[in-house]
Length: 140
Image 1 (cartoon, rainbow, N blue to C red):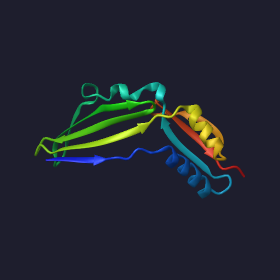
Image 2 (image 1 turned 30 degrees about the horizontal axis):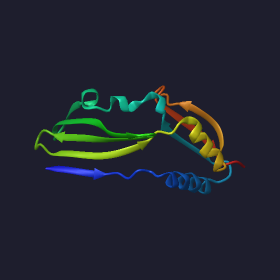
Image 3 (image 1 turned 90 degrees about the horizontal axis):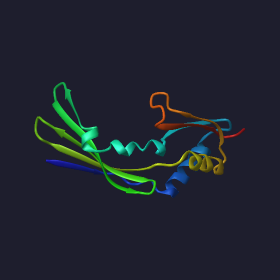
């Protein structure tokens, strides 16, 4: 048996609406903190079966295999398929996803354009060099 899950791409208009909606929901002085992946790290380089394959044992379930594979690259968009296989019955689940990798300057420009003040941009302490953590706030 095979299961598939489709995931929609976040379009630029959706990103803009999200930034506006969060800004409107924040009270003056309210903070927005979020992480986004750093495209310079090129995480997708490890999204192939050989590099990402793993097997774990889950109590009551048995062995579960999983891996990721890039299926398409188009500018800042990277599409990939995640596969999970349950050894107990051979069930295979796949999930297709697309991530948009935004440069730090692009995210900062978008935040400022939506009225945010950027207080800091740091690396994620548990994933150094892989992500940006933005600290932004609604002024006032």
